[in-house]
Length: 330
Image (tube, rainbow, N blue to C red; front, side, top):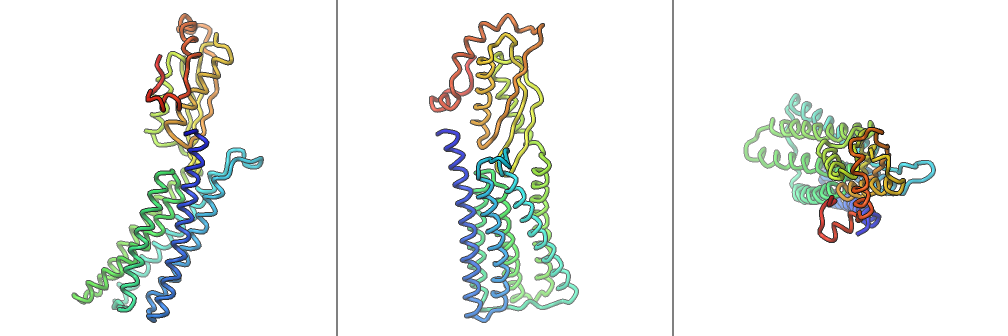
């Protein structure tokens, strides 16, 4: 499988998951409206209006992911990956707003000691919608984790908030029927609201870090270091390793020091091989290397001729992987 084919498959999977999310949100909203009108349940109708917000969010998510998959152009030479990050930031703000509203409602109900209203005809509909939202959330989150899409993870959390809020409402209604505890409904709302705020905070922090070009996780950086070090003595040293993320795309750049006696073609071959190894290991990553010559007093000068023969025998990392060979044999 070529790198370009793998990237196309990743984009196809991201866009497909976003489209699935949008269609699911539309179906859920329509079903709630229909059953709400038939049953006359105000609770189901209010949930249907809330689902319209899900439709809007999923539409924004779908458009942003499709835009982020577009190739670089003259105005955006580094691509459109951060469109996805902006969508994640927007969804995080909306989810945080939902959490604040849930907490506010919980406090108001505690103060006023409001008795929960049980919409008998709507309970089954709400339970079915809860189950559907949970399935949709899990599927979208799995696709987001597999493709590294922060926008899909954010979208899955948006569906999950429906699971938490509706699940809390249903649970409190059932318990209230048997116990008469009026404090349970607002108490559950406060717990659910606090969790939603916590999850939204994680999304917002992640989005801001991406916009500020925070480095990739240390384990990822350490993997890149290990790949580079495995190529000694083809190279003398490396420095200025930098990483960042733009949506689902990762970016890595570093300077590699090679023997000053190398021909340009040999130095390029080492750098090119390193870039391919990093791409193979990380997936969906843009790698840029800068080649520096070693010092005149380089202690490895006497090995240059022996190393040059190994450089010319380098194989494409993807071919080595297909053949079942791991790493570079030195």
